[in-house]
Image (cartoon, rainbow, N blue to C red; front, side, top):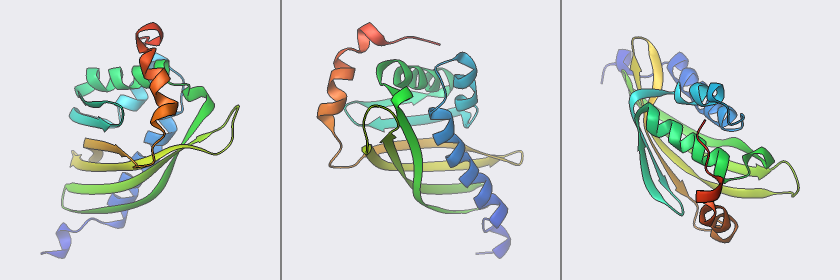
Length: 162
């Protein structure tokens, strides 16, 4: 392996910043402007697979918009805060894999952790810019299904598109 192919500190920082922005943008409001910021973190051919109460894959800008709209209209995100946990970034050249922990905490009404899990990502650098190409979200085994099920059961009444 040629050392020039290894990810640089700058590469790793740029990818880390994408992880940080992901968590920050999730906590934005449900406006179209916020959706566009969130979707801008992904390549147009990106896929995001969610394994929680659903096993769903969202593809491309429209799919990612649907994912964002769903989360913001079905769940009480205005009461929650998303944080980045430990992470590992590995890769060569213009490809990187990232495994990182996510943590959702209450910021209103209650205290403590709402849920936790892991993202497994594939990043690509194109024209000098790193973005996510593929993300898989897996909830932890102790994920509070009972907390989330009522929101999912009511999604037809609460879902709104930005």
